[in-house]
Amino acid sequence: MVRPLTFKGDKPKKRKVRSADSEAPAKTRKTEPEADNPEDQSWVSAEAAGDIAGPVILVLPSDDPTCIASDANGVVFASKIENMVEGDPATAEPHDVRQVWVASRVAGTESFSFKGHHGKYLSSDTHGLCSATASAVSHYESFLAIPSEVSGTFSLQTHGGDGESFLSIKENGKATGGVEIRGDATALCFETTLRVRMQARFKPRLKASKESKAYEKISKKELEGIVGRTLDDDEVKRLRKGRKEGNFHEILLDVKVSGKHDKFA
Image (cartoon, rainbow, N blue to C red; front, side):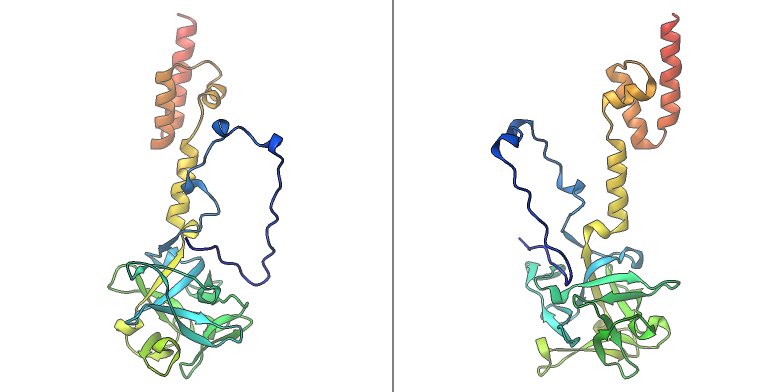
């Protein structure tokens, strides 16, 4: 089980101490499904550039799975990935806060910035040298995510897409992790193909799905409050189905009208 990562400046959460008398009986407690947990810490792959948001790890196409990391001094290096299922980088999760970057859309552009655990941004200079020492975002700290032919992978074009170069790797035994990270590749190739892993709770489509499920959940009492009378089981099913399929208001009107007919029958 991966421990939740903490970032510089985060305040530790205080644990609430409850007495035994204040604890609700176990049989009366309601266990919420994990999918509804706003603090969901699971990791998924970004499938489109529009998915990229929040904490991410940038998985490199190296022989031994690695990802882009930075130390506290802003030195960028390839960090070995330890948390995977059967060695598959498509299931990678971070085990070190240095591997995590917070992705944000650069205002007014389609590009992204990546902020490290130490509060500095990933950068690629005009010579293709990568670092993480910048305190603000310029075009050197902007990267355009271009989907590749392999589903769920991207190439990161430097300088917000204005530069004709891409982040890439070179297998190098002398480099940290055996991989050198550069930003001067001039053509798209396997070495420029990265996988973006992100926290599930930030993925737009998953968030929309959770919001939709939350909307569909409604009690009989709530429905009776909306209609203004007692409902039978068939009416409750119809209204709940309407919430799910998007024609709730039409069914609601029909139920209200039928209720009036029954009243004056």
